[in-house]
Image 1 (cartoon, rainbow, N blue to C red):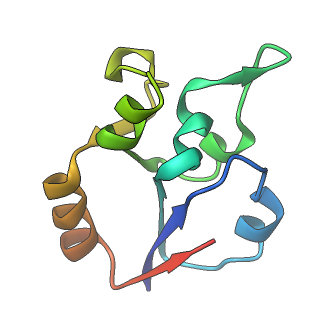
Image 2: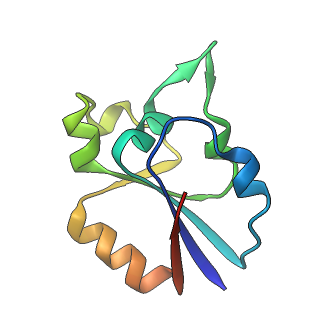
Length: 98
């Protein structure tokens, strides 16, 4: 199963992601979840970025929080709403929100 997970909060949810089993896992950062893609704590990037190579951040939510795409970790693909719809329908069989 290909599973896309929406992450909308900055609190670490790595333990939850560790329990999810999927053939292909994608993490879609929205709302305050986009902070995972740009902020560092104690000089370290978010642990969330090491969970899968399929990482996406919603450009509109980045802009709302004052970030530009060039500030995003290079492992994260920035997508707009239209691109997000394409990712969801083309890459994932199911989506969940945590």
